[in-house]
Amino acid sequence: MSHIQDAQQYPQLLPDVAQRAHAPVPSFVTMEFTTASGKPLTVRIPHSVFDQLCLHLGNAHKAGCWITVRCCEVETLSTETIARYVNMMAKTKLHRVGGMPQMLPIAIFSSILSN
Image (tube, rainbow, N blue to C red):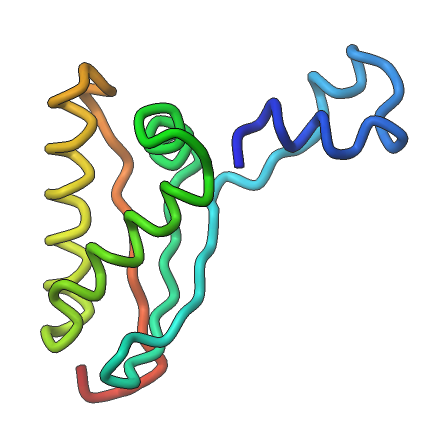
């Protein structure tokens, strides 16, 4: 969800624009899901990257689905390899559509010890 949508969702909490501009925004979007093979994954996406994906894919739901599908494409590999793949795909997607030249990495974790 973009920072603008976050602020629009909670207007009663932040009634004036000056307060909204200074409200803390989490620096990451966190997604948790289990792949078809049963591997539980936690994905931390920097807001700057997630916002760009939302912009280019249409909305937050589509961006979340895009990330999930990229993870599931390589779900049998180690979490480090999944993270490298998802970052490469995101970078390719954002560069192809004129996105950010410098990108913070997407981090992926699993609660299973043997990846």
